[in-house]
Length: 202
Image (tube, rainbow, N blue to C red; front, side):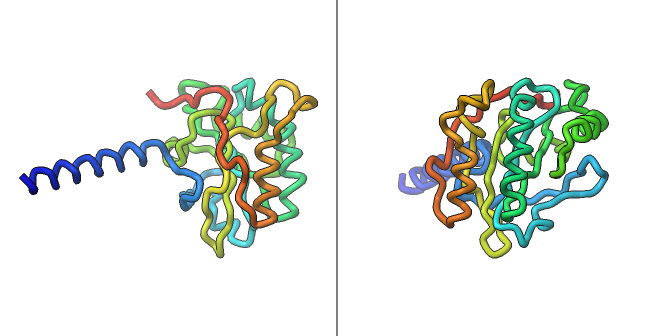
């Protein structure tokens, strides 16, 4: 009877662990590294940013109206914080077969049109989006550098008003970055990402 109880408990724990993992990374977790292709043809990974204080990782894309609405704000945020050691890395997780506008070639065009000075990389297999637990575009992850090991400091939305930058009341991302700069935990450290659903491979 005790053995049956033990194995039942073990099975439950394994099942719960699987469900938890399927939800992706959480605040406080170690950030998963990657090696993904940038629009300039180079390969980008977290290891390239070992001297940075943090990284603003944003899952975004070309076609989504929410992503387009935030492009100028993302550019401005990178301008504000890249020199302070917390640059933007933008990742396009969408399946280019389902959404041709989000193809690698169109990413290069969009990056040139908008004058992106930060990496815009393609998650062609969608494995990084799945690992992080990204579900929307845009979906933000602020990473804190702890002596060369990055951990998740904030997950969620950029702010509380995608349609009108002039009437934003809560700058969730900026507040999280400012907290990171002061070595303080973000508050809040999690918000609901608002945007288009990621277009997964069929």
